[in-house]
Picture 1 (spheres, rainbow, N blue to C red):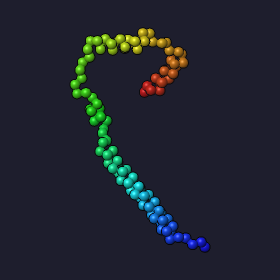
Picture 2 (picture 1 turned 60 degrees about the vertical axis):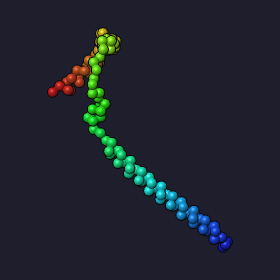
Picture 3 (picture 1 turned 90 degrees about the vertical axis):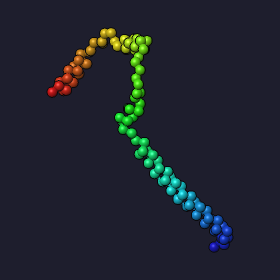
Picture 4 (picture 1 turned 90 degrees about the horizontal axis):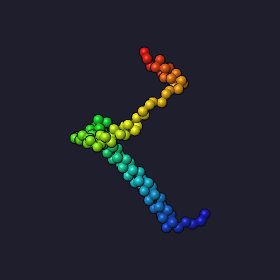
Length: 103
């Protein structure tokens, strides 16, 4: 059996101890980091009502005449003047839905 130098054995054992200590330290660091993030998330949770209240402006200013006219113009552009006639298939499907949904 070849003779192994004591310095090599000592170096390998120190390296192994360092690797394990780094792994243990890193896992403890990550565990602490995760726990602190959970606390932050729990503290910041808001209900839907609170979010809506926060996002709704306190003072709503009325629209100016120009803005109202602009909105009416957009609405007129988006609203069809004559609705498209329904095909017989669409009419049949609508009647079936009405029959199913009507008590």
